[in-house]
Image (cartoon, rainbow, N blue to C red):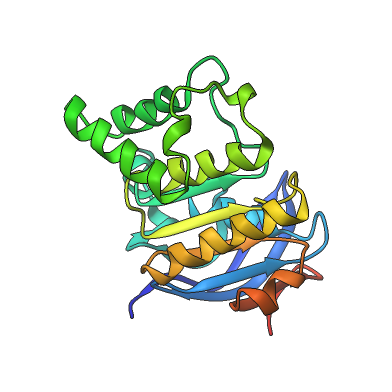
Length: 221
């Protein structure tokens, strides 16, 4: 199994304040990692650094073969095409259907042929159990259904890494469990998953490595 994330003694800043320091972290292909910690402890900042939303202030960092310390702006889309992102607040385009949301992502990442686009959308919707919802608008779906669509969107380009930032925060317990179970299954297929969460009850049911953000440090259990 190859290492796809390597952080060595990195430091992250937000608005010139140190959020995390002395961070050593590695992630293997297909690994499932829980990232836990209080609000404001640096979880989101760490995740955002992995897809170059927040720069690495010091130390050395590599994600999917990209050197984050020397990443050129023009190379950021190439990095992000290999990463699927699942947000707590869904961030679906509200003025278009599920199908149109997914088609938008594929076209934006270079897919050109309608037959290929349709086939891939059908595949990912089937994978998350939402094949019969492609014509729906986001507001016509429950929170759990919207999050399933977000997962479908995240796996469209067969990413090597999925970053999930509190993906169950707005969901009821049963639906939340289903979403984490889906992400866990995806990791078994070889896609690494890093999931920020407050809910430690998932760890027993869906085993994974636990990493804590506390006192501006990253602590591995």
